Amino acid sequence: MNDTSAIQSTGQSTGQSTGRAIGTSCLVALALLSLTLFATSGCADRPGRIHHPHIDAGDAAREALVQYDTDGDQLLSQQELQTCPGIVRSMSAVDTDGDGLVSESEIMHRVKFWQADSTARVPVRIHIFVGRQPLAGAQVELIPEVFLQPYLEAGAGTVGSSGFASISMPETDPAGMACGFYQVRVTHPSLQVAEKYNENTTLGLEVNADMATGWTPIVFQVETARKAG
Image 1 (tube, rainbow, N blue to C red):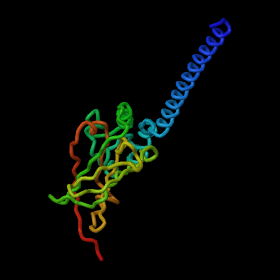
Image 2: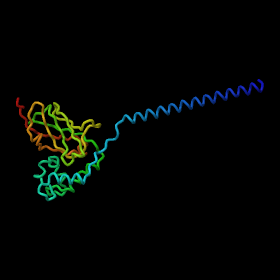
Image 3: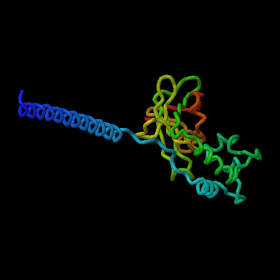
Image 4: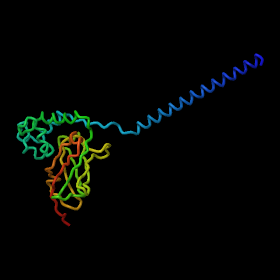
């Protein structure tokens, strides 16, 4: 082989190697680009992290006194709280000094307690019975107490044949309720449920993170009658 042939052969070999290297680099770059696009698309399709609703603890506590403190002593008695069954049911947890009254600071402390936990949605199962019989088909609503309505959404569920309803806010993933004080309202499509369980309900519930650690049943007994007509 003469020198010219050797040079040509070497040039061809070098060119082929360079071409293969460039080709390999392009394939790697394309693969990385595809992975990046896939990952970006996947993240865009996933729901964002669920956060606690922002509740201004001070404002909420002050509004509670505006709503329920009828005698103006800056304390809420159980009599004054009859229209706030969510707090009444949780009196032992809210009334931290044990004086039988609820103060603005105690409500503020309870709101901060909810927000200190990382559980943003709590699974809620409510059992509804008439005597010993489950009230299948009943609609159960959790309505935030008035002073929390600027911050929290209502939730609902239907009682199944086993007697319980899983309560959740609409279009929420994961399903469940935000921590807070709620009124519980029960209605039925074919039975008349007494007003003290719906429009003028005496049923209340505090949703908190402790409920997420187990399935302690929440049971309410109601009274019904056949709807007229």
